[in-house]
Image 1 (cartoon, one colour):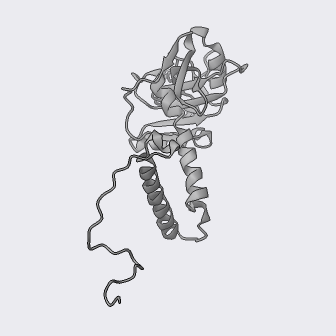
Image 2: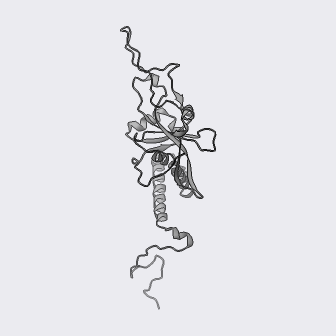
Image 3: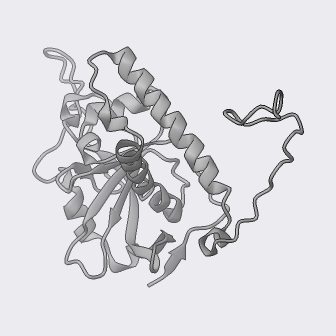
Length: 251
């Protein structure tokens, strides 16, 4: 099986929306992101229905000239969508690639992934227009009996598998940052009731976190050994620290 590593020159559109299945399962939420002109990489549950690659709903029935003209797309017992779990289990072994996405604390993190272009099928029989194709990304670790994670993404059709995986796994960084914001910087300590107050509180917490991350990035790997090579500016001769005794009037 081919192993793919994240390329240093990856091309990923700026600021795609990332979220877990609590949001990704909501079709209206996904449509709303698209209407805003944004891309997304959203987790979904295994029960979400899609059309097999290359398939789509049946076209509207031919109008016979009686009653209202038919507009809605169709499906029947022979032509119907499947869950993303079913689709993943039908894929050939050659569709799954081993992809690494980052260095862990002990080893390189990697797993088996597959990505195909599909159309979401949720209640499309109530629509007269086809949904646009998007990426379905699936993860199936070698030690598991079936796929464990799924994502839908509107990244461009020419996107590479390693770029899709990198974004899908990028939520780990967001969760880590969010945890640090709550536990270390007090984001979760807000007890007010107004939006303005919360917005002010959250803004200050995020600004403080940004400052700390910037300071952290200034430390070289040698910081672990206690040897820091940080530039230190010269102190102006007239500078006096607050609280220092004044030289005026000294005996």
